[in-house]
Amino acid sequence: MILRGGKDGLSTPLGHPTMIALRQQSFDMEAVVHIEGEVQCGQRSGLCAFYNNEHHYDIFITKEQNEHAVCLRKRVADIDVIVERHAVDYNGSIRFKIESNDEWYKFFYEKDGEFFELGKGRSSLLATEVTFPNSFTGTFFGVFSEQGSISVRSVAVKELNDVDTRNKT
Image 1 (spheres, rainbow, N blue to C red):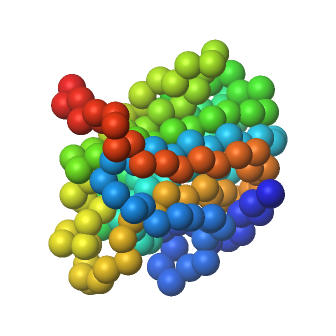
Image 2 (image 1 turned 135 degrees about the vertical axis):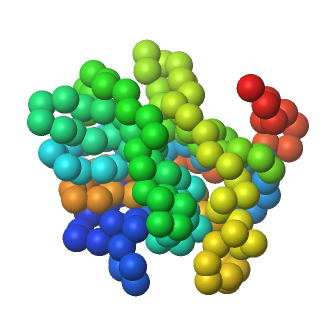
């Protein structure tokens, strides 16, 4: 499957971002995506925990000048910031993972066959009680692309009923 990112991004008010998403069914879940393709300057392609255009966390690959980077973006109400950025040797293929529990969304990227944690965000900030206007849609795990195209090689979402993801460190 190929996602072709248009002019609208995840934060575009009343926009139509390029995203394929699945509703989060429980607190303890894991989503993993494998994406491939050339990444253009300014493009953002990756995996998100998405409530609405004003409340989402995104892990993505991007290209700035001649350097690829994996970034963690947090959008909560009127705050929109990239909180982590790691330069990477991108060879045209990368895997991202999100683990969730009742306190945190944790964001990982794969390097040399091993997942590394890039950062985390509070689960409560993507909840109906916090978002404005108060509405209930629930949070989605989504594969997205902004300002460019990416091939989605695989997506897996599962509940983590038997795994303790609540490591508070």
